[in-house]
Length: 312
Image (tube, rainbow, N blue to C red):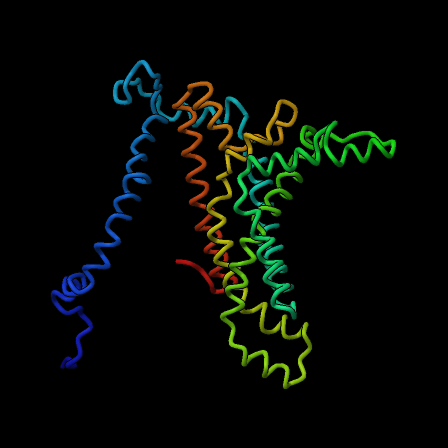
């Protein structure tokens, strides 16, 4: 015998839901079209990576090259060694430094007892997020220019030699990491502060009645509530490990520090736009895209296994 309950969906129920929420689907439709046109239609251009394309021919008439451009990147040029190294060091370092600094800063900001001071500090730290990289570089140049920078002027006034922070390769990674932290730590702090504001105040009151210290309330209440937000932000940011802000790197890269500053996006730009080798640049871009997708799945899987938190 079978029970009167059926687990099968009711016929036509899906269409009734669509009809019921037709206004919401209609509002969503333009966004779906935009994503399809600008994110999925351009993927047909990936065929360039498998052909020897030149502007004198069309995409379809260009001679077939197979996997030659992919082999060229990994075996013939050896460029993957320093481009992948630079990309991983600066992007992974940026993600780790920004999220950890914002995590700690949000907790410290929550401990401020004066709301006006807390809002002032929060607004001040978020402001750099809205400053363009051109202005940011101009500010850094004003401080660290080899001869005219404020820091080097003070060093020379004290009888010390100036330091070319903007040009010497040994300073490149630290410069990028600190510049990114200054620019984005305030924005990430807002996300963590939003998670803190969702915590029920009764938990803090109960902990205070039980005699918990401020450190114990942070350790047993704040930190556990912030970990889910940290995991989600870590997973989302892992997809951009191989995606770099080309505007930032074009400003900070020069003839003396390119060996430590050239990331994969700059490498693709150099061969695709400057040298006109579109097929090779497309191949490198495909490699970068698949590695980024793999990083998202890897990070999501690790987070799901270790913390039982994931985004899919």
